[in-house]
Length: 435
Image 1 (tube, rainbow, N blue to C red):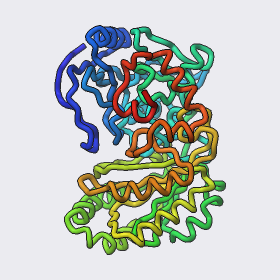
Image 2 (cartoon, rainbow, N blue to C red):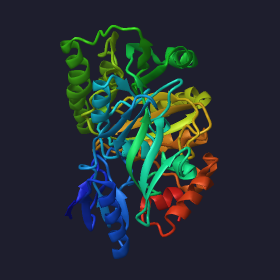
Image 3 (cartoon, one colour):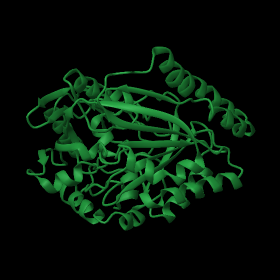
Image 4 (cartoon, rainbow, N blue to C red):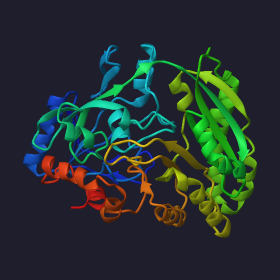
């Protein structure tokens, strides 16, 4: 196990910390020993993945645990339909390994750089009518707790800890491995299509009901959206041609978009005109491929983000309010607004706990002022009982969150039992979970 002391920053660059020491363990035993030593030295402990959270959820001035050596698939159980993977494994590597064995997760988000434990622990999700978040696909996990113990958790073993730790914000301990439910690999057909805002919002419930995975992007300062419908298919594979994939996914969505965002940051007055042009640049296309090649796409333009989970029946009203707010303001928004859905689940701190959910995400290009936009959007979302994504920017505190999570007290009681002295605490957790 190597030990260093150097600064750490997240992907967006808005969180920078200098921990007292950083370790890169290669086993649960090494990690547990590092936790015990930190406790003896009076250092708080946090684990950081690849830094794709925009909050300071992983920030610490004590011991920072990095996952680079805690990677790899440990076990594939075809009979049980599960795969056990070390917590620091990037989702991209997990997807590729599963694909090589003819297996797949049921659903995933569109970014694959996160570690499996980081993605689960902050509530990373894709979009789905029936299939839920990364955390909801977990059937077991291994957790190092504040006293240096290694707990194995599932519905049958330490079930109360398992229920909370699937989405635990790093507040209960450090996850060392995760077991996911998987299924035989399948084909997905994606249909991407530009569509007017009024049609998408009028037919939103129909689109959700008729498609296994539906999402759309609204381009502020326009009445234009781009929709994406993913549904299982008998195949065969019909991926985009290399040229088409490069034009859509690299040139338009990354290269040109980067240039457009930089121009908008330098000259905000140009943004509405640019938005009208760029919202018409993407064309309709249909393609079929294995799941991770359809669900995920490269995201190289850096940004900051806020996302709220709303009762699904409130999504259209909230989005229309957001559009009206942007139109009557002096805000200039270069990034599209993303809308996704999820079924209700039973994880205490899941943003989809107990209700059919729609997500509305707002972004700003890195280095562009975002506070006024995010604050105005947040007022709309909280008026509809919104729950903020744990890994994205928001201003909510424990008093608010206890009111929108029916099992909030259950989670904090597990935390009190496992980490009474807050070895795994930091300023962010103090705000969102209370002292």
